[in-house]
Length: 208
Image (tube, rainbow, N blue to C red; front, side, top):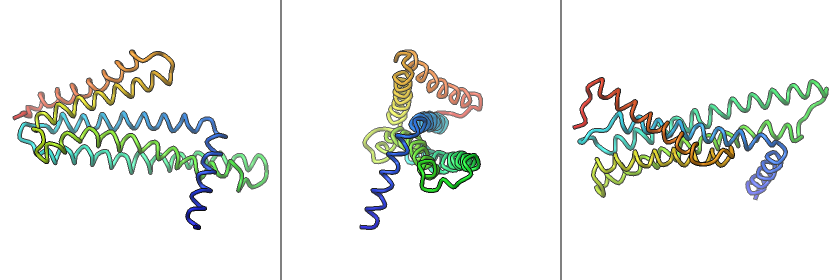
């Protein structure tokens, strides 16, 4: 019962803080999109850079997922939490000096505790989920449902599709339309794939 009350209290505090701080949702949204881009591009790099016709699909899948987990947990969540927490504590400290009193228990004090966690969780979400989705064709290949070449093509198509969806999302937020932002995001993903492929070619790494 005690845990349930604590969770209920935390959710209520979260709602009050998010309502009060209009910038919280915008910050969380930016971090989600930024880290989603990072996760997808990193997955494309592992996919294109490590593929060969005789590669073990489990290795590629773990490379993509492992990179996403490392980035998601340590950079996307922990790094963002620590930096956002420092910023919020600084704001509270400066406000306390101006007001010459403690703000413990106020919405400002709650924000310093809750906002960093809220932003960090959204930040880590994209960089964990999207690479796992991109690795899913290799998981299917590993259990023998599809071939490794099919997995490679499906993975790249999936990655570029997710980039395009992020572009559509940004277009919807910005109000500048859907086509240009979608094409822009797709071009970034395709450019990343072509760059890694070019590096493979320069280094003479064979596909077969």
